[in-house]
Length: 82
Image (cartoon, rainbow, N blue to C red; front, side, top):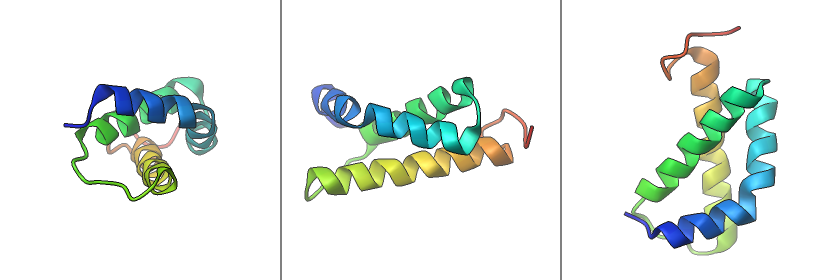
């Protein structure tokens, strides 16, 4: 498991862009916050290594998009399109 301090640093560095991305895809605050949280949890669980901050940011954004798609299609257990 990744060090919580490293995840906190990544969160601080990416939180605004990550939230905007999630809100754009989900269309509401609650789902955007949930998708963002899920992406950060996956970052904590990820045991791979990143070659740079940019690599980590790109990976996190892609995971966030996938989480948002799960919200839109109902794969997260919250139903489908609204």
